[in-house]
Structure formats: C-alpha cells, structure tokens
Image (cartoon, rainbow, N blue to C red; front, side, top):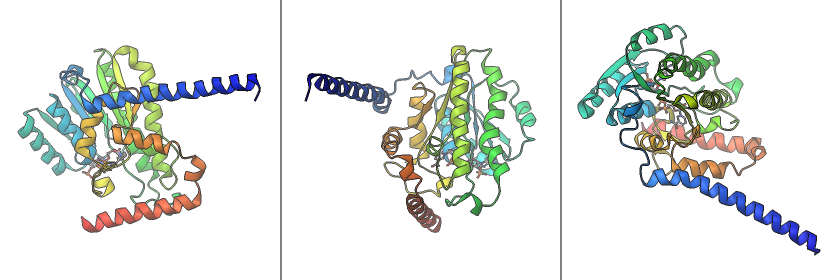
Length: 310
Ligand SMILES: NC(=O)c1ccc[n+]([C@@H]2O[C@H](COP(=O)([O-])OP(=O)(O)OC[C@H]3O[C@@H](n4cnc5c(N)ncnc54)[C@H](OP(=O)(O)O)[C@@H]3O)[C@@H](O)[C@H]2O)c1
C-alpha cells in the first residue's frame, strides 16, 4: 500500500473516530438528567402561574397535568370528557393543593378556540402542553382501508397545536418567559407506513416546533417537540409497561428533565437509545412490503391481546 493511501486511511479513520466521539458526547447529555435532575426546583414555577394541557383527561396529558401541579403550577385541563377531567382535578387538588380549571372542548372541531381564549383570559400561562392527538385507526392499516376521518385528525393533531400556540404564545412573548411542549411521536420523525396520515401529522408537530423555537428562543421562550415511542395509555390499549413501553407517569417525569436539551427529544433515555438503533435501519428495509406485513401482524396482535384483557 502506498504512503498516500496509508495517510488517506489514517485521516478517514480519525474522522470516523471524531464523529463517533462527538455523537457519544452529545448522547451523554441525555444520560445526566436520567441520573440526577439538572434543573433547579423552581424552574417550572418560574415560567408562570398556570400550565395548560390539552387532552388532559387521560394518558400522557393526565400525567403532565399531575406532574406539573406537583412542581407548583396551577393547571388548566382541556379535554373532551368532563367526568375524566373532574377526576384528574380532584386528584390534583387533594394531592398538591394547586388550583385547577376545567375547559371542555372537542379538538376535532374548529369553532372552539374563541371560547377557550375567553376562558383563559386573566391567567398567567407559563406552560402549554399541546398533547391532544388521535390515530386514524388504532390497528395499523393501509390509507384506503381506514375510514375517512382526515379532517378530524388534521384538526386534532395539527390545528390544535397551531391554534393553542397562537392563543398562549402572544401572552408569553411580552413576559419573555414560557415553555411550549408539542407532543409529537417517534413515527413523526420518519415516514411510517400503515400510519401514513398520523405519521405526517406528527411530522408537522416536529417541524413547526423547531421553526418556532428558532423564531422565539431569543425571546426567552422554550419550544420543544417530544417524540415518544411507546407509552402505556388508552391509545395503546394500556399495553403492558416494560423497558421501552413506559407508564405515562414515568415518561412524563423523565421528559420534563429534558426540557433544556434542544428543540426535539424522544423524551426518555430508553426511547433515545431505541431511536438511535432504529435510525441505523435503512428506510428501504422499513418500507418493504414484507416488513410492513410483519409490523402490521405484530402490532395488531399485541393491540388485540391488550383490548381482550382490558
Ligand atoms: N401512547 C403512546 O404510545 C404515544 C406515543 C407517541 C405519541 N403519543 C402522542 O401523545 C399524545 C397523548 O397520547 P395518549 O396515548 O395519552 O392518548 P390517549 O390515551 O388517547 O389520551 C388522550 C386524551 O386526549 C383526549 N382527547 C382525544 N381526542 C380528543 C378530542 N378530539 N378533543 C379533546 N380531547 C381529546 C382524550 O379524551 P377522552 O378522555 O375523552 O378520551 C384523552 O383524555 C398524543 O398526541 C399521541 O399522539 C402517544
């Protein structure tokens, strides 16, 4: 081998090692908050008096509501089923003593926002969690095999994010403080067949968050897209929690430690590691019909098993 080729290989090897080192160092930032909280205890309270959570009656939204109340904020619950919100409100009031306001709204509709804005008037909202979201169908299937609920899904997964952000952000900017979390999904970080419209709607959440963070980070506002893999909630038919499939409470507690780690996070260490492994699989493999069929059978089987046991 010539001297030039040896030099070339040495340089290439050094570049690969350097890239690997930088990636490992960047990954460490996800490990530290897992071991020990890096945020001061007053961090969330310092954003403002109230937190607003959409889709707060159950699952991840319910967990954000309770956790943020524990961290000293009063809570506005906005969701569809009044009785579920009443139960969450009672839970928060009894365990934390924080104040709770309930707003009943269906985010598949577009005529709800002026009422929501009126109900929020006079509240200093420091945190907005755009959590509400829906699947086209719980069982994965081809686009044409699902019923056409496109408009409802777009309203719920996309319009709710823009409209709620519009209402809240304009009162955060003059105060130069605020936190907006947009709960997207891991399937919003790549084109996911069999969940095409859901995946695309969640990609919107990521792109919108990142662009908005670039516009408002100098104004003291933190905007972050959270892209979980799997969390045990009604949406996943309460699939059994394990290392990857987190309980909503564990996921939310961990994701709140990641707030300052950039404009997009998978929300917990297990999902960060899983994402890095999934990113190594070429999309062509993931998009092949064989793998789609395998995934369809695996997910459908798991969901059907869960729905039978609940
Ligand atoms: N669970 C997961 O594995 C997972 C993974 C990635 C991303 N996500 C995302 O995380 C967010 C929360 O998911 P989740 O699993 O907690 O969902 P969930 O179990 O379905 O709970 C959603 C909550 O939102 C409410 N809701 C649903 N549709 C609504 C509507 N049209 N108007 C008002 N409220 C509505 C529900 O109200 P009711 O109480 O009336 O049903 C419920 O309280 C979603 O955006 C989802 O896409 C979830």
